[in-house]
Image (cartoon, rainbow, N blue to C red; front, top):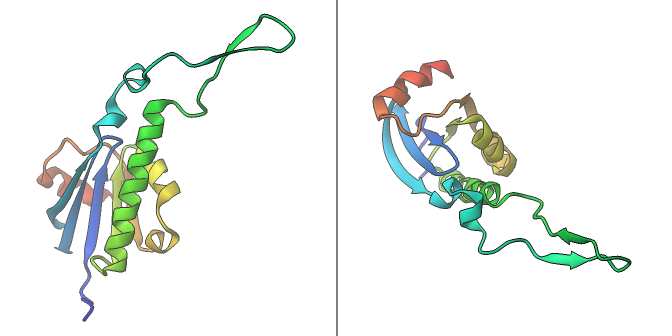
Amino acid sequence: MPNHSPLAWIVVADKCKAKIYRSTKFPHIEEVSHFEHPASGLHNQDLISSKPGRSFQSFGATRHSYQPEVEPRQHEAIKFAIELARVLLVGKNNQEFNRLYLIADPYFLGLLRQHIDAEVQKLVAGELAKELTAFDKATVEHHLSEI
């Protein structure tokens, strides 16, 4: 039987970590999940095993490097946004929340927006472009008033 009480999830995230809080009595929250993706915080050179490949033009001796379209660190952040978006979709499908609040640094908030399912997006009740992953629960509760 579905829970019809107002149940909110609050996602506090950046490109390396995320916490999901639950609230049944807004703005009081409790942490329910914690995710880490340390590869998003590494330097690009630490994510690349070797220099880009080289090619020769067919009509000369000019060399060109193959450059990835997305920097490795950005690619890792995208992977984390996709992973978090899947968690939110599962939570929505399991009726674990009926309102969603997103708090993330501006860059990662943009990535989340791109990868969150359309049905989950309909449940977004507010967003805050702010980096709060290093702060405690009380600080997050305080900032919920800004949404």
